[in-house]
Amino acid sequence: MAHPARHSSMVSMSNSIQTVTPQPEKQLPTPQIQTPSQSTPGLRVPSNRKTIYDRHLNRSRNAELSRASFAFLFGEMVTYAQRRVTGIQDLERRLNEQGYPLGLRLLDLLFYRTISTSSSSTLTSSSTSASPPNRPLRILPLLHLIHGPLWRLLFNRPADALEHSVSPDTPNEYMITDNDPLVNTYISVPKEMNQLNCAAFVAGIIEGVCDGCGFEAKVTAHNQPTEMWPSRTIFLLRFGESVMEREKVLERAGVK
Amino acid sequence: MSYYFTILSPTDVPLFNIAFGTSKSGGDGIARFRFPDAAQNTYMTQFIINSSLDMLEEAQWMSGNMYLKHIDTYPPASAYISAFLTPSGTRFVLLHQPPQPNIPASSSTSGAAGSMSMSLSASTTSSSSGGGLFGGGSSGRTSSSSIAANPTAPQTEEAVRQFMSEVYEGYVKTVMSPFYRRGMEIRSPVFRAKVSGAGRKWL
Image (cartoon, rainbow over all chains, first blue to last red; front, side):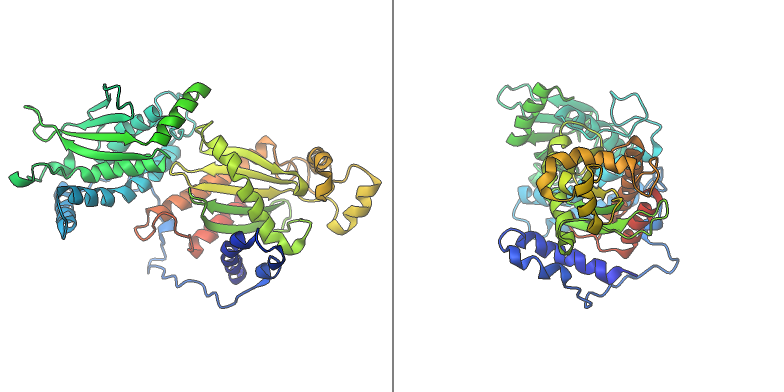
């Protein structure tokens, strides 16, 4: 009922912030503009009257996707990304960009689901109480979040290894290993493109999660086949300067 | 009690705004902010909220909780700021202003008569910050146990936390929509209705 008024205040808000300091005398007229022209955006309610806000987010929690349809869909995504690319790096960058927004979303979903179940404290290994999970503040909790809960959400199992770079020159590099990435199961890369790893998509998801938590990072996927695991993939996480700086400050402050 | 709720993106872009009043203890759900200049209501709430972002960013890295509780106070208008941080860095900020026992017109006379009444003018900042808490808790038409009376009481924190969690649920649903991209304004009237419903329920 009060929609038009609220909308106009919302619109004038963005103007107001910009004009607040430079011209004080111009502040007065702006909030009084009640533009009736603001029509409510066309909302189409589905025929069963159920919008996305009426659906429960945990309903599809334990639902599993058919592997065949996923393989098909992912194959199409790779084909789509391959159009007009200049090289393998470009292709990997595109796959990465496709995964990135997914990571941002999964982060919120992951926390929401952990809160709403609240019985299991799977997110943080340290917290024993059933209190809501903590946002990761340091690098290590973030990596555990990716290695454990995120991987379980995506692939139904934790990742296989989590390592820190041994080289003293690159303390900002961490590695997460997946022995047999699901995304590569049905993909055989041509010989002339053997640099390519389509798990760059998953690297993009990881990058989205890191960025969402406030840890600026570059994540890349690398082939590292072994005798036993021919499609073993290493995700290399390179955190930015600002993150390492903050890490030091937080360490001194004793934040876990 | 009057509330102003804002969702801000990690880069401080406002995504959603709503003003509402309490519906508890006979409230009519309409916000009545008291600021020195009534015409600037929309400015002042947003100004106070944005000025608290520094405090929020400080608290952000000190505690891993999503609900950061009451983080800031703006004594001249006895406004209190509570904040909630989603894991992806979006900030939910709630400004709440407890009810004033006297209407602003008469507060100037009673303010001169007794120190009990809370002063609204910014010149007496130091005295009003203490008096605001005291005056809010001891007087007013609402009972002292209600949420509105004491903005820093545990019950209030709990109610705000419940409110924030409910908004968070709606927010996650918004974010999961494939047509929503990060940093987009949330325009859905359904979401707006959900938020004001949560406000009616908890605040």
